[in-house]
Length: 147
Image (cartoon, rainbow, N blue to C red; front, side, top):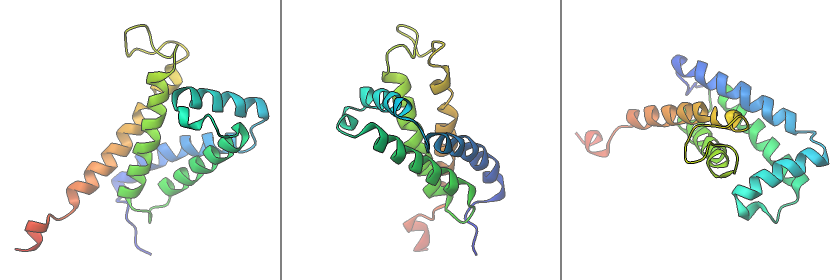
């Protein structure tokens, strides 16, 4: 079995995986009220989600978080792939932070008390982008390969 994660990539991958897996597992058996709350917040920011059933949305979100968390843990999943997935996931979370009323202080990026949890997800974006940038920097350029 070939490992695509280098040793120095494992600590940030495992840290992100722990948080994301915990979140996904916590949503796996969410009750109707919790599902409605999650769906309401997400569909308020991302209107294309409004037509989805809240329970189905929460189950799908749970499965996605569990899959992403597992991929981050497994060193044979390429860092470019998990980095791209983590970047997309974190961008979605930060979109919630930026677009949901009450998450930020008026006219500022500083979080309110309610926004602190989402604002901290910036570190997920940093890990994801770090993995992507490192992997893209390692790819040989076509002009170099021809020499």
